Length: 404
Image (cartoon, rainbow, N blue to C red; front, side, top):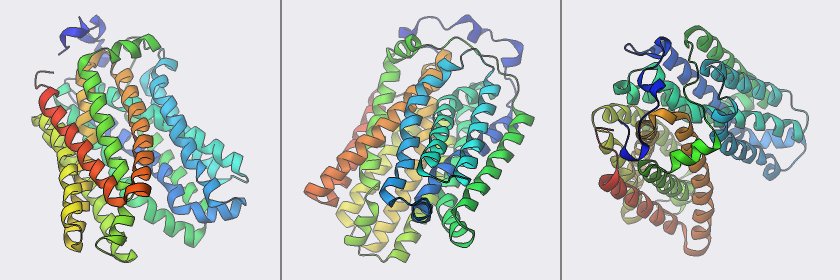
């Protein structure tokens, strides 16, 4: 399973302790991780639907309040590659419990925030939980199920993302309007507490395997398949966020949809992502290369459809739904690829992926904004189509082999 450049896999991985052997999947623990990520992504998305009342209540502008989102992203990018190093001597179930407790603490701090600094502190704590979870989730899944079931396990975990994407913003907006924005964060606290209870009951002992370090990150980065996978992450994520960040202006100006219709189209995007995540897991079990390549190819086709036929409301709506389906399938294949490429250092590989993803988000948003300001909104979709098409070509030429 190791590629030639990696040498021999650590003996502890080839002959793991009895507690680490997985001939039967621990699906309860996998579901508990899905609950955890649902709580994390819900908390991450809440400010987007509650920004106006939050800013008014804290006595700051909406732009300043929006920095709560920025704080989470920055800290998450730092926490992702370093979490495995900081906690390298700890049982991984203890680390996961700790991250979920950070989620609960973050929501409690936000619920009772009386000032912007307290809100920012809450979001910093959330960033630690988010970065740590994303860096470790694939590595934990690898130890909870046999390798052949890894894509299915990641699909279940990422279902939490899909559900949060569909429900967090509309439910948060409704609760915030009826009972106030603090109530929305209190509900998110309860969700985190429920996830922790299930994790306490289901996650088995997972002693650390190998010792992560900054040197380990560099060693993992030297593996050819890891570098190719991270290039694909960079292309797909930057292309997606360069284009999809500006999907609302596109829908307003090209097919000229009203706000009610745009809301329905974005809901279709979220629902598409939910089913894309499931489909991506099923396909990755059968053909990992196809799963990784077809998702960005479908994004490229969706972007091209919007550019060429986007004046048609039906075509635009269908393209956005297909885009959601494709992007929902992206993380399952990519994380499965990275874990198979570095099974002996899965946590370090996961950290590199998360950090690359965060950099790509920033690059895509900034580059997309420059394109929109200087060449029109269509140019951002053109870049999206080109970047994701290139990612698909790279995967077809240099992507994972079934033997990996």
